Image (tube, protein in one colour):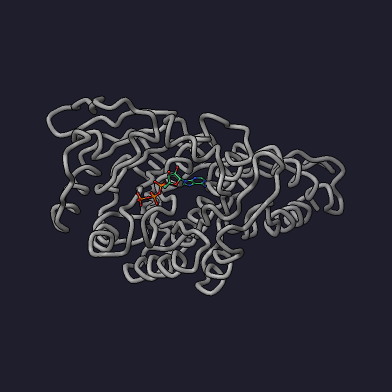
Length: 365
Ligand SMILES: Nc1ncnc2c1ncn2[C@@H]1O[C@H](COP(=O)(O)OP(=O)(O)OP(=O)(O)O)[C@@H](O)[C@H]1O
């Protein structure tokens, strides 16, 4: 009787698709405890991704689902998370202290890749993860300015081999911008650039990261390709604006990651709609629905669309990303939803891999 009820509850829960996500709970979470006592059921669910902003909503929704099961009179559901490691390619040495690396890329410059990287890093931290940000945009490193790290602040040395990341807004960061002066021209040839970046990645003393976001150099040339091959990337996000040309470039980005077997976790459409700060009127300045169409035709998730917004723009001038300056704003909430969807996508792949290779150690310690 108890076993039958338990199995009905399990079945009901595992089929639930939580708001903002596209996969059923079975693909994203474990039920780590399910206690049945008469007609009372207490459940503990462990997600594979952080979700502080949605935790209560998930708990309420899942609890309602449990109460709908025949034979249940009262119930409680607790939701927590545990972030495991995922390396897309098994043949690349994964990094100590970094469980997952997410590359944020764009087919061309100026679409808001750095803005998205910085805000997604802060959003993930706000959702409850330990996060690092590596500015790999060596030709125009902007993370320092966007995070408000004072010019001239240098990373401290750690031992003989390492540099300590600079912490800003709760995120550990490293950038070529921290190591050179503002007027040093950055003329890197391909091999030099990838070598410097690998060194920056490996010689930073990252402290126990769930996610390291890499702000990639714009474009889909040799540097990007080599980086994607040499760094143990778990997944990539492609940022695009709705203009046709940016979309065409973004397609090249998706194809590049596919070529090197890095899973594309999804597309973020930036500057998708202009919302008038005076009257709230919405205008699709650069066209509508392009990101969605591309996501469909390439069979990759559409993670979200960010508006062309004054609040988002402000960060460039004042070094306070919208997540830090206006944490309760609509824009901040949109970034948090994208962060949840993106890491849920990663968790799905991680779970498929660990079920397929149960003896390969990809645990999070
Ligand atoms: N959603 C947005 N709304 C308003 N302004 C934005 C938005 N996203 C980015 N911007 C602004 O657009 C400009 C370019 O953004 P960003 O530097 O992030 O682009 P990028 O793709 O990283 O560029 P590059 O590849 O040249 O480094 C910045 O001034 C930034 O503040």
